[in-house]
Image 1: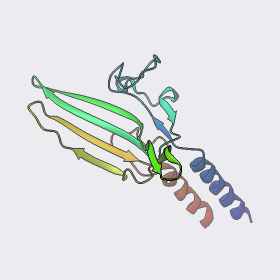
Image 2: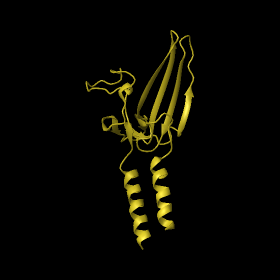
Image 3: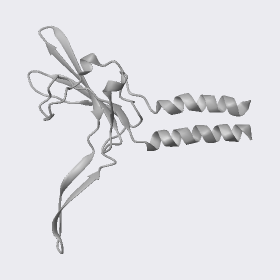
Image 4: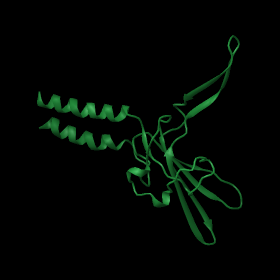
Length: 164
């Protein structure tokens, strides 16, 4: 009975953890990105320290992302990083013959796949870009993105407790 109660508590924690919404680390490559129009202070990834000030809720996303850009300029490599919620919100118009045009908005669930991919760039000043996508809380922190860390921690503990 004790094992069943423990298993129930762990599973309940995991369900609440997953249902509460995705949280990602967010920081930008530059201090004032052109696409941010409000005058709020912007945290740069240069100052990233895994603290709570970098954590954001992602109500319209099921993926976090991390973009790493590397430029080679005058015998030096410049590496810039950006983290945040992956853009998955579709906003547009649709037409219904009986009702006319109407606005629609929804989250595109299959917009990304977990993992990293290189983005090709062309031209004289080549930029190497790697985009990484993951689908668990705060998964976009590390150098290489991992699968759900919560399962890696809870599953071994659960197996040990069930054996005893």
